[in-house]
Length: 306
Image (cartoon, rainbow, N blue to C red):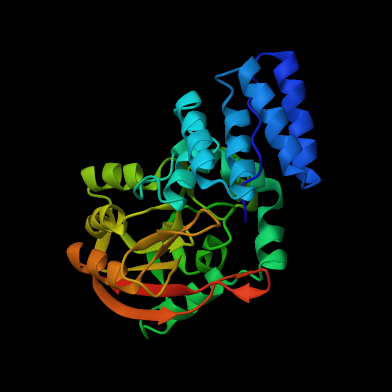
């Protein structure tokens, strides 16, 4: 799932028109013409974030990394909330250290995909994260009945659905109002909250909320460092509760931002973050939850407890 182009108007009709011509040229792979048009665009509207972002993409396609970095930086300055994700491209290009993804970027990304999200994952990417998580939890050999379940980054409810019959009370949390609207229409959750998962966990810990199962299906790839989210998840987990999550991985130790603009976490980073949170690994299995371009994306399925 790749981000869709975002167009924030410059407020200048001539600049907007040149931007649209440039997008046309990009669609035709005429990157030289697109770069020329985008340069004209930003001369007319120097604070036009969408044009600077597109120029960064074009310059990278033309093999000019330094110019691409410059354009992405100007896009980030023009739009500090970074709806386009220019900061992520700077990280990917090695021009900035790994950092949390901007909330506005994540929200815009999933709002744009909500209508076709289920079909895109299950049909287009052969997504099987919920199935793998259900199997991993069942393999613990314990009662498959949970009083309260928390689904972090619940999206449209793909992961929550198979666990619904196993829970008395299910809470879903997501940043995207459009995704939550789709989940609400399925009638899976008893409570749905629009919030960042880290801030939600902080609030739940403050009121001493407890969950017997915490799910995070393909959510942590939108976080750079797992220490914070796992440290906050631990205190809201019931003493005999489980946390089960899937994420993308790589062969190294740390965290890398893939070309898909999703983070891949090395096995050692996952183990260290769990240990630091006081969570014990019950199972950690290599498995792919999706395919991209016909190839499985390396991943991990993790179940842990207090």
